[in-house]
Structures are given as C-alpha cells and as structure tokens.
Amino acid sequence: MKDISFESSSFPVLGIDDKSDKAKGVGTCTLTRLDEDRLFLINSAHTLEIWGDNSPIFIALPNGKTVELPFALKTKSKKIDKIDIAVTPLLGEFATHFYDEKISSFPLYDDFPIENFRELSKRVVFFGFPSSNSRFSIDWKTNQVKAKPICITSIEIEDLTERTVDYYDIDFSIHILAKFERRNMKDQNGIIKKSPDPHGISGGAVFFAFVEEGKCQDILKGINFVGIGNEYLQNRSLLKATRKSAILTFIKESFQLN
Image 1 (cartoon, rainbow, N blue to C red):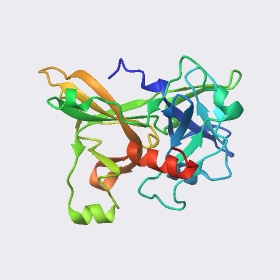
Image 2 (image 1 turned 90 degrees about the vertical axis):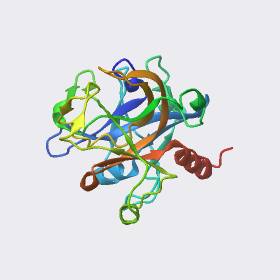
Image 3 (image 1 turned 90 degrees about the horizontal axis):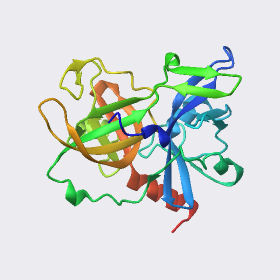
C-alpha cells in the first residue's frame, strides 16, 4: 500500500484556531469525478458542522498550495445522516488550483473489473489525515502545509445484529463497515500493534484492495475506490464509509445532472 499515491486525490482539511492562531486538522477531503469535465471535492458534512459554518477551512494540496474551500452543498445538517457528505464542485477560478500533474481524481462511476478478482481475498483500506496537531507542519512564509497521513487496512463487516443496525442507523446498501480496534489491530505482517487515532480521516478515500495472501505479507493485485470515510464507531470498534454509488446519486439529484 505504501507504493500507492493516495495523497494525489485525498487532502488534509485545516481550520485556523482563533485563540492560538494555529492550524488544526478538521478532516480530509477527496477529489472525485463524474467525467473528465465534472469534478467534485467530497468532505464529510459533520466535520464542517463541528468546525462551524462561518469559520473558513483550507485544503492543503500536494503541489504545495493551500486554498480556501469556497462552497459546499451538504446533506442533512445538525446531525450525522446516512450519507453524511458535503460536495464542492470545481468551478471557475477555484478549479484552476487543481490543474496540476501532482493532483488526480477518483471515478464516481463503477469501472473496476471485479470479475477478475473474485477469487482473491478482500481488504478495506481507509486513508486520511488525522486531526492531531503534531502531524502538521506549517510554513507561514510560503503558505505550505506538510501533513502525515495514515492508511488503515482491515476486514469488511457485512453482518450486525438488528439492534446495532437500528441504533447506528446503518444501511448496508449505503454504508461500508470495517473492523477497527485501536489496541488489537494487526499490520500486514500479522503483528499486533496499537493503531493510530482515526479521528480526522472522515472525508478520506476508502478502497477495496484485492490481495494474494502470503506467509509474510499480502501481495496487492488490484485496488478499487469504493467510497468516503465518515465515522469511527468507537463503542462498536468499527469504521464506517459511504459508498460512492450513494454519493453519485446525491450529486446527480442535487445538481440535476445526467
């Protein structure tokens, strides 16, 4: 997974603390595309609400630029709804910041040849930028931000008790769930390690990785973008994501697109 350039499409989202005048991690956002001409930044709606609707937030891009997020169409406000996304279309002058060879996007349409990978083991991969201040280095003279991301690899959970599903408002047609226990996760070599704090990776890209299992480590054979990370259900030791099909439907309905 280390050889995959996730940072070219998922970026740290920062806000400036008024009291300390320091940047703080707000979350992660991911650049997606409906086609070559229609691109959208996707955040988790709840991260924008927690930071505050009137407080500016900034995106640190891999080309060294830091730009303010000018607009976001959010799903239901004041609570985490099933989809929990905020969408910013790339339009006008704002879009020009993303015309760079270091920046790429993930498709919202489904073009992955799944039939070629059905016999392989599947992993769920969450990528994003934790909100811990120690992971951000800021050069105010050049307005550049350096952020250290994390990549969490786990196993998909496809069955829960009816009580848990109802309590957390989980819909498996919309959501992807993966097991996540901070003190009992294994790395790719099967060694148990304390996992990083996932707070802040909401809005980051989520993938299905298809691997050939080996004695020492898994061998990656294919990887598919499948959604956006949304929530850490700490009491249930789960990470939750919104499927890209639900995001695509929301965008098409909201912007009246074909």
